[in-house]
Image (cartoon, rainbow, N blue to C red; front, side, top):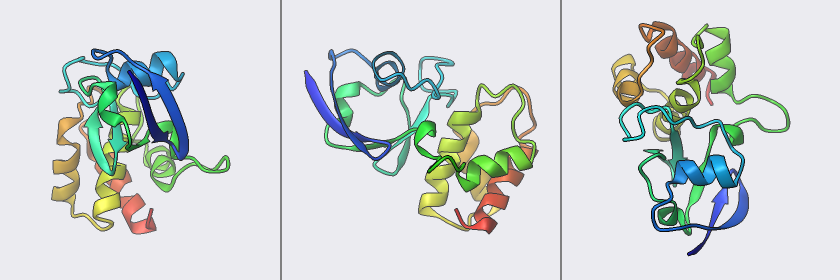
Length: 153
């Protein structure tokens, strides 16, 4: 099946089978390796991307479902060689340790800030509750998201 969608601001088309996931399409066919496969069942959040403004687990989303949509990945956040405010905030607030969960965590946070530019700490924690990080207690991650919100992403 042939699909067309907007990926990080550019129109793309791809040929996909009914069972290929969006994560596999991104990584294997399109060479975008920022989203990671952690659990493979949509529970860890390491594969999070944004589809039409909504954070989704790309490992369980069939690729054909993005036909006609707009997809944003971690690779699409930086503009003109400049990191997105959220990416900079993660670095500045030491919210990156091993880095495996970071792209998914940033994308989940980006989706939150797109809908709610001034979330409370509880709203931030709720938004990232579907993303697992084995390295931190989430304190610096929450701090980074709050800081980015205050900077107005």
